[in-house]
Image (cartoon, rainbow, N blue to C red):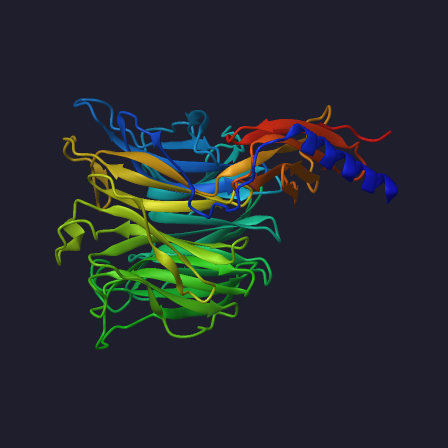
Length: 530
């Protein structure tokens, strides 16, 4: 104990002798740090971004697909692309393709699930086949985007699939992929379970084959109870998906067995306040062991259209009536919902029409923006709506992921462009148009960050204690699974700072830095004890 006390006193004395700068007494809040940047602006038309976070590399992975070209007579491409992005909003190395070009078929709608055990991603997508039209596939890529597998088909049937979604089961180390397909005529919801190598564990199985069309599945995994909650757009009461639909769901166990089928999350058909429901989403809250589901809604009691939510228990039963999450002037739709356990809040991002000339025909609007808000664990709004991007033209299809190390979000979207496009192009009901993939990092500014690794091997060290001591300042933080640590900027004084890094079984390391108002970043290598 005396040695530890003497060491601490020595470090404090060293810092006080080195520093003469006066102190400030207030700190920044979430939202002080922002960075806007372009993710992809190629000659191709970029569409439908998706995003995942990798805690080992402390970076984001954004995927998208392309269609068309911007030069008449050029090749019509339907390819998959990706980009790694740091929490500072910097593009890490060059963009990559998670799939080598295979034949002339179109490849669309890539979505990745991250595997913390292998530090790899499994990417689900749809690929056009000559004989069977659209089929669901997966591929495996390493953390740096290196392709590790050929495309792996998920069904021996000719499913004519679309709208894939994938989640990782951290208990069983497996993946559940869901999609809608029309093997039975109308769209139904099917699922497949595969292992970490892409081997089929449970062959494609029906999740919902009700009358009418069911499409656009979304999945959230609950590792506490090893169950999946899935929901989808459901049109069992109406002729087509363009009519007023509903949101239905199902609860599956970890093996894919049905626990609760055909959950009417929102079925208002024939009611006085009937609207249409599309674009469903789910977030799991491990603190309360419950789900918050949400969707885009056109019920007449909303301003025009809005985002509506409802809580569900882990047994698939509702925890109350639905309620409004976002309803401003104009239309709000295409939401993405996250629960951020470190902040004990939900983050909701969506497309918003409030800054356009509002018209009842919101579907023809050419001025969509990206807005967001924070929600309490009970779904109540915290603070005002946040305008993340209100640039000219339209910003569409926003998605988000969170880095707990830096306490920052990456939001990606499609930026619509005004340009002529070749006729006869597009995919399904999507009309071809020009567009780029853009991004924004939003969160807390960093003061002192870095990574702790083992000397020689370079392997990250999890659970290292990093104590930073400076003028009027002392804080301790632990490194995460990737060895990363971060201390937020809270108006620290300029001057000299000492970082003391400890981990059982390793020799202690001491690093000194001079802070002049710019973020400090270090890499520390610890030597193992003899």
